[in-house]
Length: 77
Image 1 (cartoon, rainbow, N blue to C red):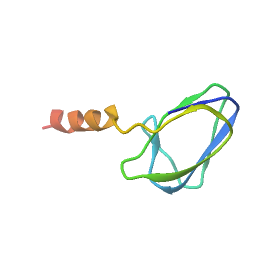
Image 2 (image 1 turned 60 degrees about the vertical axis):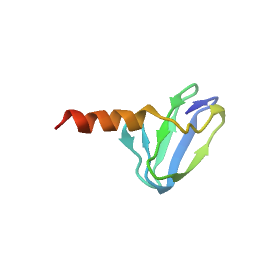
Image 3 (image 1 turned 30 degrees about the vertical axis):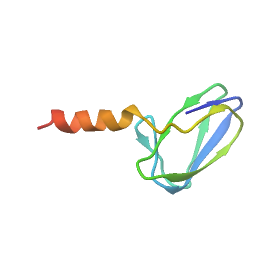
Image 4 (image 1 turned 120 degrees about the vertical axis):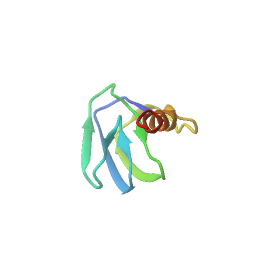
């Protein structure tokens, strides 16, 4: 999760990742405005470039995404 202090550009260099459920296209630039809160999720890891200044940035080891995906699979049986 990041909160941005300036207009910023995020670019996926390697791997697979998504922002709020939308898959990122490798090497495409995604522009975010001042104050945006951005959560990047990856199942297997990735390399990102952020051009801008985050106020807050951290990596979480526990995520509700795993539980949400599991519940979706169980509910479809």
